[in-house]
Image (cartoon, rainbow, N blue to C red):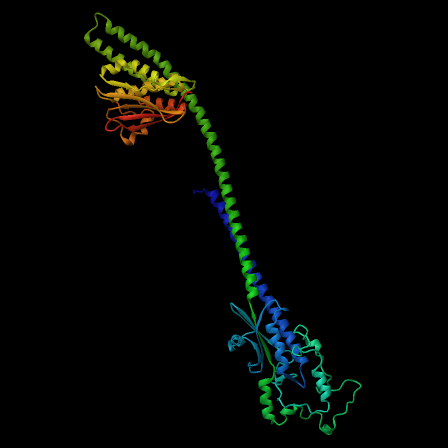
Length: 527
């Protein structure tokens, strides 16, 4: 497809517009992907906040019992009714970034996941969050430390206030108590914080006896507050235990299935938008090209119409000139014949007079054929017996046929056709005369006609002359193309013009083993 300079600019602008749409869709797709990641990040932050509140609610003297914390984590991992995304792993970390309590697929946790605050992979996303109230300050001292441990199986609370403390453990429902409570109802609001004083010690509610139990009378306020089953540990052992069981951070591994589905759907949507934008740009370009081509064709049509009008005027002028030229030629021919017939004319004068007559006749024949070729064709169809028309033309050319002692066969065609009688006779005259001129003396010409369908017929004129080479089969019908020395080159051009004027077709074929065939097809058979 060849484009001019303006066409290149138009297609370049359309391509640029399409590329802008594609870039816009890619940018929007990145925005959607980032929004999906941000949503997943926000949900992980909500879960981290919920777990922070739960650990604070489950604390007893700075400790969280593992058997009470694990059901909550299991419910978060296994129950998907309250979360759109799937939680694959939950791990509570100590100060050494080792998991204290872990629920879910433990293969998803590794030290590499703690390199940053979040890590994204094809199937999941890992988030590391600090637990509120469990961070370590610059001095290395834990603010409100939270320790996770499991008490010994034979542990019983011997504290006289144990009944009240036991009531604190039973505040709110438990997901494993068999009372129909699920994880959605298990939140920090079900576990109100205990009453504590400024030193962090548990105090009874207002209105109760604030005196210490008898066995703790005389013990300093800031004494040993360790759990009863850990009071036998030395201070170093207790600190070592605290360093490995103190809550410091939270690791959440969440499935990216939802975000990947959103990304995939959005990608297909952007692809469809870009595809149809490209189709639209291509359609606009092709429409513009067709409009430009139509405008160019209209300009050419106007120019061709002007040229055709000019050619018609030139044709009429040439035909008039040829017609006016024949009259002086006839006078010259007549004068030459008179000079040759004078009784006292020398033999040399008589010979030159005959030469003038012959050349005049040759020019007159050329002018006659030129006038016939340039004359407008007005087709007036009548019913004509094809065999009778062929025999009549053969009789007209009987002198030429007899001069070369040729045989002419006309096949009997028992049907008539619809044609212009004058144009048909001129076609037959030129074809038979061309065959007579092409054939050798004593040659043969065959004229045949046969039906080629219910309403169509075919006419053929065959000769056994030297024939026409294959390269000239289409050239032979062009004006002034001839293979005879005495030919004008307009006879077959006039034949083709008359044939096409009546809606027929003519071709030149080889006549095996020798000669040529001129075949006229699509003759309409008269009813």
